[in-house]
Image 1 (cartoon, rainbow, N blue to C red):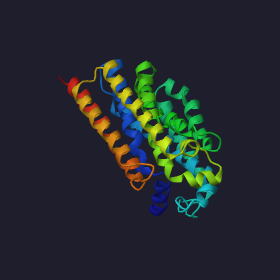
Image 2 (tube, helix red, strand yellow):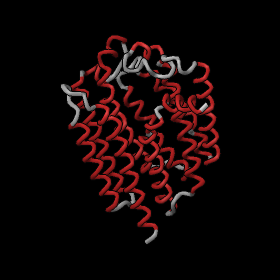
Image 3 (spheres, one colour):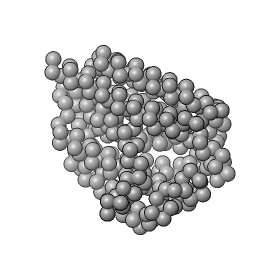
Image 4 (cartoon, helix red, strand yellow):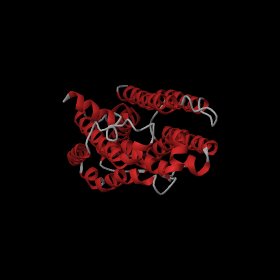
Length: 291
């Protein structure tokens, strides 16, 4: 049983939760402080964790299920659980159903708006896995999906959506799309041969990396905007500056002629970025709250 659980966690790349979960917490913190002048309750945080685990697990399970045939053809992904025979299609289907149940359960426990927005969330979670079959804009669709984490955190504690929440949402949209473009550069030849779509396939790796840089410049602009439309102060600024250094380094270590450090640019740098921005935001808000 423990081995099977480990296989499921490996299938959904549980360690990649570090990308979205810190920003879900940040959305909850910002929303609660901006709207109510208080920190979110532990109960709200708990339901956000359950919702996040359900949403991400369902999305990754669907992605692995839908891509199982192409994954088996790609040497980089042939060892994944389904093509390698470690998990059966029926097992993954049940896992997806249970994950959606967790998402729905948590959303209904949080507030009415969280429940009302479920159809949009479910649509994006399902739709993304099909997009690389017909559009090179799949990276932006992934961004729109992953960025539901901070938006969902905001809605979970406020029961509303305002323009501050949407600025944060699109900041994470462009951050996600940018690093996903970088990640997809390693599969450009395979994607071409299989008729799959991506920005590197459509525009070539050099232009794709330039587009990723532009997206991350927009990410930086979004973080600056949050500084001016909320009560965030110097602690947040420090975290934001570290995030800029991380983004610069991420693009510095990857080039069209050298993708050898792509995994570092994709996982390590972006995982650190999300934790840093959340941590410094938390310190900023807690310091202000207890002054």
